[in-house]
Length: 549
Ligand code: GLN
Image (cartoon, rainbow, N blue to C red):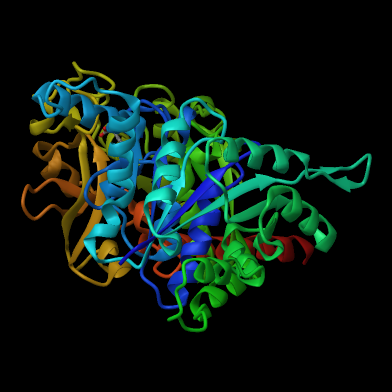
């Protein structure tokens, strides 16, 4: 029988509900329980797939091809288990289901209303994963902030479940902010009091308060919050700002967040937390032996969340290589033939990011050319791989007008073309090639060296692909397709064997990188960057020595 923990947020957005939920899940998992996390988002989009990354950051894709909120990425990275479509539900999806039922006549002539029809559908989704029998605990993160108009039906659904289910089956954690006023040198509890009051007015009373703070709360503040918010003092949890999100599970362990939840849910069978692997990873992360600098070439670089999974994959791969990965964001719109060497100076590796549309394309192609010609380690993901193909076609094969039909529908050399099955599709949402597909790797290749096996599975999110009509021409001139989809023959991996490290992949390896199993491509890329860095430092040292002699 699954038990349910709901996580709500108050005072402000961006308090890190996702990280707190993932950290609690990690601790419960480390104690031997089977846990999953789901996110309920109050916006009207059916899923975030149609959202511009500037709106909500990266769109995270699950194995089953769901386009989801980026918090699901955190859940997977922390828990090292897969999530699915069922783990992310939006208001839009809830309404879509209810409206479809109404059109079907399922409500038998009744007036369809927010309460009970929308709230019933929310409750059904809240309980769904618990019904699979796979999990002991389902943690549900409610997006938005308490007090938002959009969140109300979700909070009402939590209220009803708190009332309907036995006390030991459900609990609520409320995340708030305890700001520190520098001028007064004081922590302020009032915003937390107001936030809990607002939550209570909707009929939901939190069992635990997790308080984000820059300064330690101390017993006095904890007691004050407990007294005025009507929770036990031990249920006031201090969540100090951490140097890395990966430290938060250990901070929560110290604050006994897991124990409080186990007590409230009357779970008595659990072990001491086994966090050995996690701690080892954290040690490597905190004490790197050297540093590498990677250029991330993209067009959404003003917003770090747009490349969340890529940045986290660098952190995992850095720890594996015991190096700190410094990521320099380079805006592709401002890279030109004239400034490329200056813009990319000092880098040990270049990653050309995924993306859509024409903006910033030329700069990406110029950057790829620079990496191909100078021997700088290169890694292209999705659009990044497509740009590597276009660059090679133009500058090596001499097809000067080569392009992707995404950017130039009438190009004379469509080396990147829309997939056949995509041509018939007119709707935007959920219609790309999405989710996990197998890929067959050639043995004598860099890809094989990286993965150490011939069959892999990685996640996709794209409409365009390598045009195989050109494959022989590419292979004859030094760019090989070393990974293909075994069923459709679509090219998944390209590489240039003559280059020290030049690889592009049509899929998104960053979506499967977790703390406990970092993505092999990222680990090898950072390894290549480390070698490049060591080589260029010794060349620099040699030149300096020569100059001194
Ligand atoms: N826009 C490209 C396509 O649809 C690449 C997509 C991506 O980088 N995720 O194929």
